[in-house]
Amino acid sequence: MSYEIFGNNMTELHNENKKQNEEPVEKKKVNNDRIEGRNAILEAIRAGRTIDKLYVQDGLRDGSITQILGKLKGTGTAISFVKKQKLDGMSETGHHQGVIAQTTSYEYAEIDDIFELAKKKGEPPFVIVLDGIEDPHNLGAIIRTANICGAHGVVISKHHASGLTATVVRASAGAINFTPVVKVTNISKTIDELKGRGLWFACADMGGDEMYKCNLTGAIGLVIGNEGSGVSRLVKEKCDYIVSIPMRGDIESLNASVATGILAYEIVRQRSYHND
Image (tube, rainbow, N blue to C red; front, side, top):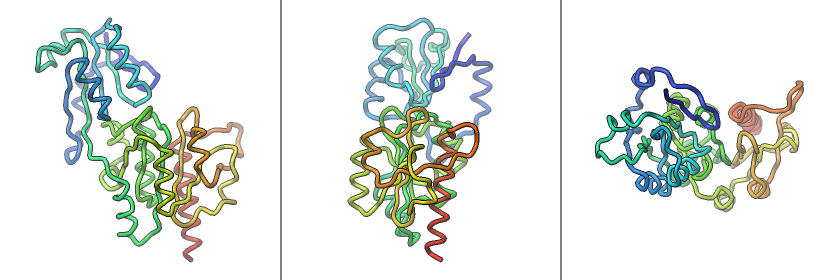
């Protein structure tokens, strides 16, 4: 019996091969590769490659396996514990050492690509910056929202955050092909860089001013934090505005992708009103 870990949840896998066959394949930009062996996988992670799925031999929990699992925690990587026979059947080298990784190779954009797109459209830059979004479904939905609301790009973190896995590509519903996604090592430094190029930053936080009371026009970056802990203190301190979504119900939280959509469309509304 095999299990899949997705984020922090463990669910039993059924008919795994059938499921894989049914999943749509992104043909234009996503090319799946496999990496075999512990050191090779660790080096790939250190190099910033996105691991879409990891297969680990059932029962293995020694040092290097634990290290690999720790580095992939919170990245959206799906992890399956399988029998050695399955790994043997998957292996092309015959030396998998109890672990095989499937990577999603995707062409990340550069910061300049975002500004080029804004210039092409004749609009002030609008960037969505994600500080530690871990759920690949959330990331895909946010990229989709970014495209629909006219944002010129999305910035994601290299560490402790989901990369552009196949799940993200599917959840974006094709938006990934049109919206630049930039992967950076340090969100705080990137905000400083973007400020130097004329952007103001609004950070989403429950303790901020209601979005209707904030000026969200012009060249702007919208910062969305981790699903559980929100925007980190250092990143929040870099922002010019702290904005909140009015809560009128009995609960006080929203899914990260939903919150992004609400705030992004407040930016769209204010931009439209300002231009009129």
